[in-house]
Amino acid sequence: MAHPEDPELPAGLFQRIDESGDGDFYAQPRFVTHIDDATIAALTEFYAECIPAGARVLDLMSSWVSHLPEDVTYASVVGHGMNAPELAANPRLDAWHVQDLNADPRLPWPDASFDAALIAVSVQYLTQPQEVFSELARLLAPGGQLIISLSHRCFPTKAVWAFRALPPQERLQLLGLLLRRSGGFEAFEFQDRSPPDADPLWIVCARRAEAA
Image (cartoon, rainbow, N blue to C red; front, side, top):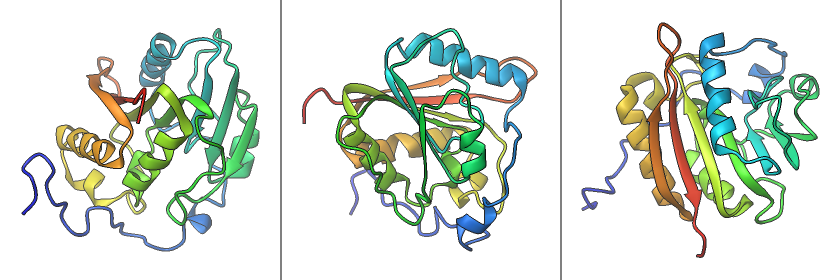
């Protein structure tokens, strides 16, 4: 029997309506934003508060915008995504890498390569989130932070069942559980940074443990 604070997860939690290969779905560039301007500004403000200048940043599941503050200089910003033209058009990226994390969650960078990792309003598309979080724990330096932001918009056929069916609070609780299971993270924090009369913005932050 599972521990009450570490429950067995229901079957089908990370299934999708469309289980065809993601490469075909994301082959066409989409130069759009997935949250409105006020919510983008709220996310940018949060990044300005939490990510220090000079940090090495990994923008996971990125596209043509990263929502990072324009007046902060980072040591590097590396992007990962599914569409090369989108990533090439992102002015904040110093380098970028195309990879389908649902096919292979292992990423190509060495251990402790980054001080901060971001997943902006796209975690709902991961079919193996725990494995991806484990990989991010490997990639983050001790004390580094993972910032996951969520809203309510998605491509419904590619979003996992958990995102489509669970209310926001339960989505956050699920992410917290998966981060704990993934190993390497501590100091979990949950925030509601939703602007008034705009798209909601919920944020999950976790710190890479200082020592194993």
